[in-house]
Image (cartoon, rainbow, N blue to C red; front, side):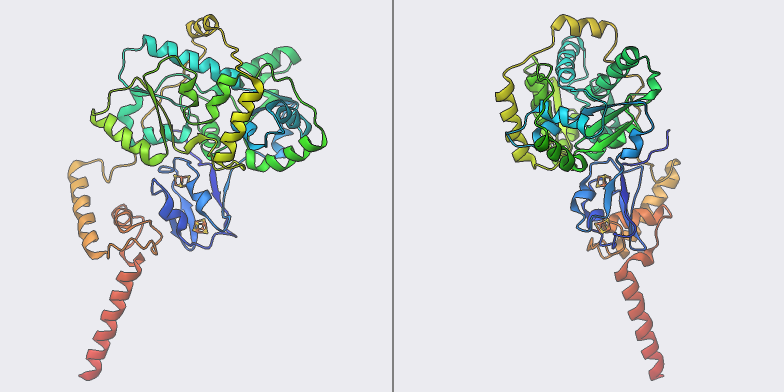
Length: 430
Ligand code: SF4
Ligand code: SF4
């Protein structure tokens, strides 16, 4: 298994060990030790929740830096469609693309048409697939990791079609290399990302041997320079290559809105995803063919590295649709021919990555489970997180795995102190 490096890093200078992130993490991946939040690679799905809840700005994404651009002879920026939704109605996608070049990229590449292509490819795949149903979209990388960790039985439900960002990067790198006479390795492909999960999908891709992207800049980091550039230079790249059908991909519901298969549904937010996936796993949810699901509540427009806020972003996108008209760029025959060439296919198998069991040996696992239950009797069940684990059950789990001690619990320590004190007082009376 490749080494995982999650997309979020804790700033040692800023973290005060308040445990807010540990309590908020949906996969219980954070422990606070010696007043520092530590993220467990095995459990983290890179959803970005910890970064959003930290009031001390102590969690930051591992984004690319301007120095990374210098490693390449030619650089291409591929903006998430969510970037277009960050600016008010006075700005349109062509200006954002133009501004990206002004701030340092050699070229920009709009991926909306590739989103439209993938909608067509998914339709074709669904019409030929024999199940298992429902099929599940692989757009959201945090969701993909959740499936690997918590729902490995759902891997056969994943639609084996690569994401538009990876496909666009693969295609454009090839073409730039041919057009400019460059070695493909001399071209840097950078995604402008709305979330941390995509950063991690570049470092440790799923369904690919290696990402076709070389790094990612956060929308939040580029927002200021881009807005400044757009105000100073009102130039615009052509927008006739921007697909409005593809542009809808930025919002939850957008992927299925451009598909012909009507028996599809959108599931938003981690809580609802777990609700639906539990039922699919239990075999009690089979009424739809395709599920588009996002860990973030409104899809990519609500990603943690955005600026506009999800409601404003959705309004801005509606404005862009109105401005551009109903541009549909993709011909069905083109999609079918690329499908025949296996252009959209995953390049590697998606493997389960279940969290380590307590022990491989069944007898040992049962003994450790008993030990854990006994520990739960000793712990106060207050889930205060003062020990650094998010709740008492997680502390008990950590103790049996040898990663923590019972004395990490402040209540257990207090109890021990009180016993010691009363023993001493009893001794004084003798
Ligand atoms: S929320 Fe987490 S990262 Fe932020 S200060 Fe508290 S413990 Fe540290
Ligand atoms: S990114 Fe999400 S899963 Fe990973 S540590 Fe932060 S809150 Fe937990």
